[in-house]
Length: 150
Image (cartoon, rainbow, N blue to C red):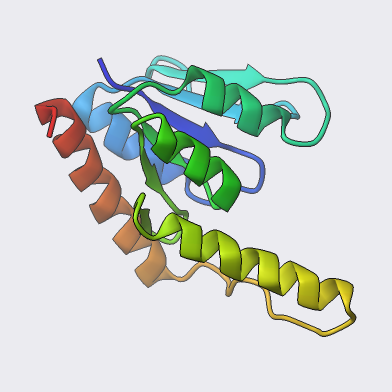
C-alpha cells in the first residue's frame, strides 16, 4: 500500500491532502517539528520529530518507499525522495521530476548565493485558489498512478 508523506512545517495544503487520501483510502503521515492537529478516523498520523534542522526531512527521506507520494516545497528533500523512487508534489501542484530536479536545485543555490551577497531575491508567491485546484488535481493523478503501480 502506498502512503502520502507530508512535510508539514508551513504546508498550506494539508486539508487538500486529507480529502484525496480519504477518497482513495491512502494513509497519510504528517511530519513536523512541532505538534500538528490531524483529523481522527481518516488514516492520518501525526509524526513529531525532534527539533533541529532537517529532522522532518530526514525522517521522510528515510521512511519513504517507491510509489509513495511526498508533499513538500523543499527541493533537497524532493531530490532525496525522487532518488528513493517516490513521487513528489509541491504545494502549488508542481510535480517534481528526476530529470529536472538538478536544475531547480542549482537555481535555488544561485538565489541563496545572491541573498548572501546582499542582493534581494523574491520568495515564492502566495498560494492562489488556482494553485490549490492544481494541487488537488495533481495529487489525485499521482495517487491513481501509484495505486496502479505505473
